[in-house]
Every structure is written in structure tokens, then in C-alpha cells.
Length: 621
Ligand code: PLP
Image (spheres, helix red, strand yellow):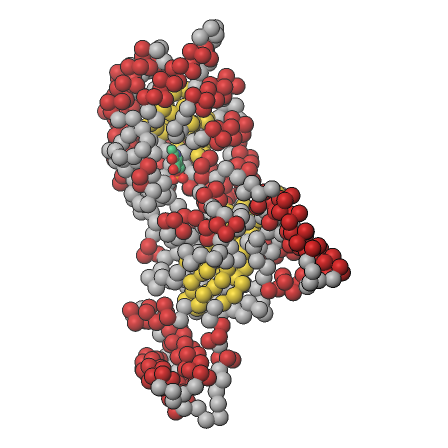
């Protein structure tokens, strides 16, 4: 698998050129040259690269696909979209998002007060803002302030209590006002349909969100009683992120469409929109037999438009505007984490590590002969012989007949024979070979924290595409598992024989080897945790000028050690004083040495927690 499944998850965003993976845009630079460029500026740890052109591509594809579906069916309602901030609130992302989406009247969705403040400050006046999630009086008051600023804001009620608070806040804000201005009101409905997959709990009858039919009727009466029915404009649902199957969406659309029609017929004349939430899935799979979704965006858009049209027609109501809050689909592809491999943990199985003697025990000599004369035709037989010999040799060691060197030679030779046989028999996908791959897997120690950079892998075993950014002209043969640098065994991406990852056999003390983790732009950054105090990695934005050349901007270095402690509310002055005092008062070192130690200590304190590669250490020395 030299392509690492690029044709499955890559969406034509990358191409392999000679030996590197390159951005399939403008001058098509390689990820390697961009990463080296940044590393040359002194940033040696993991790098999170953001590509605004990939955000633009997703937004423009979303809008053009829905416009195409509308045209196909002659649909009268509008299509509008907002970005759910929970998916990525980082300023380098949000600024790029707002920048590339201007022509689409694209807005933001907020689920908390802090997100609402981002939405109020960053959304252009006129573009939609939707506000979901649980709200108190203060949050609802913020929505009123946004409306009075001129924002096109819809506050979605998640329960009757919230509606009562809206009524109360409206009285406070608008009682004596000649032209009352208030946010539009949306209702989140609790559907019977739920999504499918690991995030399906956001929808369905037992979900924590939304109004039941009984509550919906109660809300309708309350709105009517308080003259607010003219502000009820949107029905909202969200059946869960990363919907792998399209059928639950169709069911949800039917339910929501009929609720919309019923409310309209009842007298909710201002009701004009259905917000279908997020859930549009991203293809993370690197293996054709294990795809993450069974539909395309075209199918998704056609289903939404067709079903809404059908319901509107059969119930005799206007076709609603369609809102989406797709987040993962918009953000995932824009960010790539690139980081060096620090060590390979079975380097000792190299041929150069053999310690063969002048007279080896006969079985070891035989192992060596098997290894030397292995061919495609004899591979299976020799492999079985080697495994058999190993059992005998280990017994001989336990009985004291052979020594540690013989045992080491046995391990190396058998490992080499397995590796070579698997490569020779690569077209024979048997269980035996799969089992053996597991046994010879190489452990790649990678300079990143899975808890910080791939929390959904840690918590939910969500897979992210992984591949090296160099050496792509060589077939990778090492079954690989990936270790992060936290002191936690959960920070390991195991080798899975059914969804295998093969990497190259590189001596990283001689040359650098970088891995890239793709599609990390949605959810991972803000969910990432500082386990072991590894913080958000150094990030940079990569843009392209009119000539197609790339530029690196908005570099934000990972936090240094003292800033990390400051974040945890340590008094860093006290930490600083304690360290200084301990060096100055030490009785074991000279004055000169104390000065040197202090200099070194302050240099280290100004750096981040990530490790330096072997090359970086020698460069610094
Ligand atoms: N809208 C709401 C209400 C959500 O809760 C979520 C995510 O959970 C989204 C939109 C975004 O979903 P996705 O990232 O799957 O598009």
C-alpha cells in the first residue's frame, strides 16, 4: 500500500509526486518542504499546518451541491449554512473560515456563551447565527443584544424553560420600546430517528436535546399567548455527527418535514426554515473494504431537497429554507499534523546486529542458510522451518545448551525470515501471515501526544489517515504500530492486521522520517487534553499567492514550560525563585557551574514539552 489509501480519504487534495506527498493546489509544494521550511526557523516538535484553500473548497462544494440539487428539483426555498463553532474555535481557523466564506453569506453556530461572543464578533451583519444548547437568562440576553446589533440570529429553544426565559428577557428588553427587536426563535425537536455510529446519541427519543411533541404543542401555545408566534422561524434537529448511513437522515427529514407542515397549518406563519444540523460524514478510511460512509454529498443534498419538496407539496405548505450546520465536513481536511519519528523499537532486528560465531550451533547455522536462500517459491516452507527451529532453540537456551548471543541471533534471524517471507508472499492474504505480521510489527515512537492531537482516537478509537510524507517511491514493508511520547500505554495506535499500516524501515539516527496525520481539523484541537502537560502543537497557516507560491504565516509556537504551569495556576514567579534558589544554594557545584546551569535552565524553560529529534539535538549542541 504505497498510496496509503489516498484515493479513498484524500478527496484529490494531495498527489504523490516522485517520493513525496504534495498539496494538489497552486505550485503543488510537498508537505516535506513546507515542514522543513518551518523547522528551519527553529520549530522542531509536531507541527499543525492549516490550509485555508481546503476550507474554501469544502464550503464552495457544500453550497454548489445544494444549489445544483435545488435546480434539479426546482426547489423554491433558500439554502443557508452556518459553521458550528464547537468543531473548531481556534482563531487561526475561524479567521481563515470567515475570510474564505464571504461570498456565501456563511454564518456561525454557537453552543455556549463564549462561542456566542465569537459568533457575535466574527459573523458579518446579515449572515445567519444560530444558537443551540442549554441557555440561561444571560445567554438569552446576549442573543437579544446580538439581534439589536443587527445580527440575523436564531435562538433555538431546547426546552419549555428556555422559552419562558425568552419571554421574560423579551419583556425586559422590549417592554417600552417602540420597535421591539428580538432574535428569531427556533425549536429543536426530539425525533424518534437517531443517527448511526459512535456519535448517534445526539438524536433520537432518549437524546438529551429537543422538545417532544407534547412540549412542542405547549411551546406553540405559549408563543401564541405572548404574541411571539411571528418570531418562530425555524425547526431544528441534529441526529449525530459522522452519519455513516444515509437512511436515518431520510427518516429524520420525514419527521421534521411533517412537524414543520403541521405547525405551519396550525398558524405558525413565520416558520420558514428547517435546520438539519450537522452529521455529514468525512471519509477517514485508508482501506476500501472499511469505508466510513455509504453516500456522497450529491446524494445527501438530493435527499434533503427532494424529501422536503415532497412533504411541502403533499401538505400544501411553502418549501422551507434549508439550513445546515455541517462542521466536520467543512473543517476536517484543512489541518494536517506533521511530526518526526524519534525511534523505531525493533531496530535490533537488523542483519547488522547479528553476532554470528565462527562455530554456531547447527540450528542457528541452518536459520542463517534459510534466510540467505529464501525465495518466493520456498518462502512458506522455509518460514515454517524457521518457526520450528526457533522453538527448539529457545528450549535449548532454557536448558543451558546455548548462550545469550545464540538466543539473540535466533531472534534476529527468525524475525528477518518472517519479514522477508511476508514481503515475498504479499499476495497471499492468509490468517497465518496476518498473525505473523502482528509478531514482527515495528513500534514507531512519534513526537506527538495522541491525547492532545487525536483525542477521538483515544476516546472512541476513531481512525485518522496516517502516512509518511517522504520515501513514497519505496514500498513500505514494516507492519507498524505508533507510540506517542506520553507516559501512558493508551497513547498507542496498534497495528491492526485487518486494517494494516505499513511504514518504512528507516534508521532515524541517520535520516529524518516524518509522519502526517490527516483530517485532524474537526473537534480534535479543542477536545485535546494536556495529559503529561503536552500542549497544543506549534501551528501555522499555509496560503498561496497569485503566482501559486506558498507562504507560511500566523505561526504560533506550542506553549513553553512556564506558560503551561501558569495555565494550571502555578505561581510561576515562585517556581522560578525555587529553581534559582536551589541552584544557587547547592553545595556541590562551583560558582562558574552554577552560572552555566542557570543559563541552560532558562533556555529549557523557554521551550515546549515536545522532544527534540536526534538531528535537532546535534544541531543545538
Ligand atoms: N449542530 C449541532 C447542534 C451539533 O450538536 C453538532 C455536533 O455535534 C453539529 C451541528 C456539527 O456536526 P458535524 O460536525 O457532524 O457536522
